[in-house]
Every structure is written in C-alpha cells, then in structure tokens.
Image 1 (cartoon, rainbow, N blue to C red):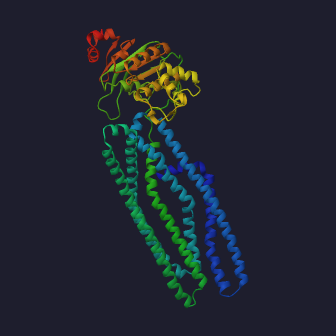
Image 2: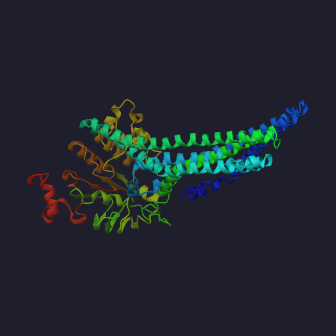
Image 3: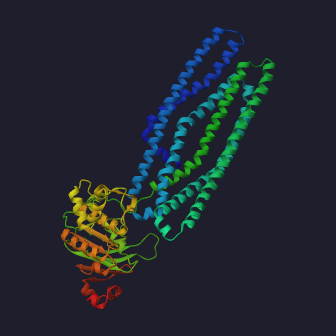
Length: 577
C-alpha cells in the first residue's frame, strides 16, 4: 500500500528524484574515497616521512571533501523540496476527496479521524520520504562500496563483516516486527484523543451546565493514558535498538583492532590499511543502521499510507454526473416522484414512496413526528444524499444529472443546526455570493430580522465571528444563516426547522418579511411548530417515512388524523380552527 501510494504521488517529481539519487551517489563515492586517501597518507607519507606526499594527498582530500559537501547540500535541498511537495499533494488530495463525500462517508470515517489522516498520517509518510532522500538513498551505495573497498584493503580482516552484518540485521528486524502493530494502535489512539478533545472544546457549555468537568477530565485522562502507554512501548523498543546497534558497532571495531594488530605484527598488513578497514567497517555498519532506521519508520508510515489510501479509495456516495445537464427553465419547480431512501445496511427505509410538487410563488410545508424522515427528505434536494429509488427533479431535471454548479445556484438550504465559519459577519453572509454589496447584506439581515442585533455589534458587518458562531445565541445564529441564504438568492429555499430557536413574534415577523421578499421563489419549510406552517399553500404530512396526507391546514384537519393529532398537541380546538 505504501509503495503504491508513493509510486502514484511521486510520479510527477521524476526529475527531482533523479537529481537526488545522482548527487547522493557522487557524495557517497566521495565519502568512500576518503578512508583510502587517509590510508595512503599514513602508509606513503607519515610512515616514510614524505611531507610532499602528505601535502599532495591532503589537498586531494580537501577537494573530495568539498565535492562531498556540495553534492550533499544539493541532494538534501531537492529531497526536502520533493518530500514537502508530496505532503502538500497528499493533503490536497484528501481534502478534495472529503469535499466530494456525502454525509454518509463523513460519518463513517468521523471528523477526528479525517483530521488525523490529513495531518499526522500525511506527516509520517512525508517524513519517511524525507529521510529516504536525505539519508537512506546513500545506505546501499555506502554498504556495497564499503564492502568492496574493505576487501581491497584486506580480505582476511574484512571477513569479520560476515559476523557483524547478520547480527545487526537480525537484531533490528526483530525490533521492527514488534513495532508495526504498536504503530497501528498509536494512530487509532491519536484519532481517539482528537475525538475526545474536539467534543470537549465544542461542548464546553454543556459540560459546565451539567457540571461534568470531572467526568470529562477522567475521559480525557483515559484517552491520554492509552496513547501514552503505546508511545512508551514504542519508545522502549527504540531505546533498546540504538544501544544494541552501537554495541555491535563497537564490538566489531574492537575485533578489527585486535585481529588487525596481529596482522600488522606479522607483517601481513600496514597501519594505514587497518585505519581504512576500521573506517569502512564503520561506514558499512552505519549504512546498515540507516537502512534499519528507515525500516523502523516504514511500519508506521505503512499504517498511515493504508489510512490515507482508505480515504482516497473511498468512492463518494453522491457521484458527479458524467454529462451534467443545465436546467432549461430557471423556474425553481421542485418535484419528488416515488422517492425512497435507505441508509446502507439499514433493515427499513427512512423514506418510502414520497411524492409531491413544490411550485414557485408557493410555500410547501413538511411536518411529522420526530424520526419521520423530514430532514432526510430535504437533504435529498441539494444532494447531501442520493435517493435509493425514485427521482428528485428541479425544473424537470433529475438532480443526479444536473450540473452541480447549477444545482447550487438553484437551491439554498438553511440546515437544522446552522453553522457559521470563523471570520466576520460579512464573510459569512457572502459565503454563497462573494461579490454581494453591503446594501445587499443589510437588506438580507433586515428580512431575516437580524439587522438590529448586527448594528448593535461594535464592528457591525465586520464583527468577528467565532468558529461555529459560538459567540452569538442560537436564535441569532439561525437568523444569520437565513440571511446568508437570502444573499445567495436561490430559486428554491429549503428551511429545515430554521425557526425553532425564534420566539413566536420574531418567527411571525420573519415569515411575513420572507413572504414579501421572495414571493416568486419556491419555499419548502420543515417545522415542528404548527403556527409556522399552518398558512402554507401545501402541507405534506409524513409518518414513518410515508406521506399520509397533503393539503391545506383546513383540509388536513378533517382528512388526516396524524396531522390533527400533531395540531391538537400544540393548539386548542378553537386555536386550530
């Protein structure tokens, strides 16, 4: 999975990767050549007392070192640029894929997990690539070159590598195999701690209202301790690995000096050759250690790559049309024909055989008990979900075939729980129409009964807005969301219980202003309050996902027992009449 992801994402950077490998190759050759030059200085210069040879070879060593520094700098530069570009591309790819997800896919992954995958998981893959380009590319070149040059200096002494290399590889391999499941657990627990922290920050008012501070502290402590526990287990394995590797390296050095001294005493080897073999042994073992360090990072990066691929490989439940159609008439007529909707894996459908037509210049209301499918029905129109059967048509065109931009222009949804973005009042209102003038904003605020409290704010339209709109009340948030949709000026307005946080007087004024402002548009209102929808031109009554009655308030009071029951639960018989 990791290789497949890297192969796909690094394909555009072939030129940069070639430069990294080329410069790292030259840099490694220069590094390997230095111990040989050092041996020549000792054997041909120091031992013989030849100052001219020492100076000549010393200048060559300086030149080789300069080449090594330049090549290393260039390689690290291009390696860092490529790895950072990879991280940028992966984050962008995940972001764009999540933007295409329907609510079902977002709920399946969960917001905390998607955030972790976009940030921490990408960072781990990016770090692996950076270490590969800056360190690990040199490991095989240095390892092979070191072995060849060590054999060239002394074959017998170099045979110690036959013992040191297998011991080091076996030692590190055992540790890496034990790390892989721990890294997978670590990523899951990072998801969990993000989820707990996100809930506690978002729900701080509820926590304090119910005095659940201690409970939430304990909840966070449990998630924190679980992450700490697995991190400590990984840390212990890392703590074991480096001393173990250094033990092998140091024991190998002692063995080379021990047996090398014997060979020098017997006249079979020169002092310079011994120093060169020791240097090559260090380089070989260091190259193995660098490779093993990469293998230590691979398990976590592999887990992260699987999680990234899981997001990138998930097909959105709502597919973009291959040949999008633009509506022939911009009238705003909305029609549902025998619409069914079933959540994946559900035994029963949420909606079954729903059908009605909402026309321009008329208000269509949808009412029903909790869980009857009202919100789900409304979400089918802007394609937050797609109907599993039947058709949702805007101006006679199935929304599944409609151009997404045309659908966005035609439909404006005010959700049940309105969300405001961090920024200002003006930036939120211009969300659907970036070029809206201040006059348009104030007019929308006036219709939404929000002008008074926005004018009272110190900054007016430029008043800062917190993420989620938490610095305003629920009623103010609803009115700002309504104003945002009014600025957008769609042909179809969908109000999903958007007046529930308003008092009756404000509700009445707002509906009266809406009737005057958007009298030529199609209005669909989902509401629990009978007073909000009793004057609608058409009322659709839902019960357990089915339409059990359609008509005006007066007609339904005599023909639909479900509607009559809902009405009389809120109004007296005289008020209902």
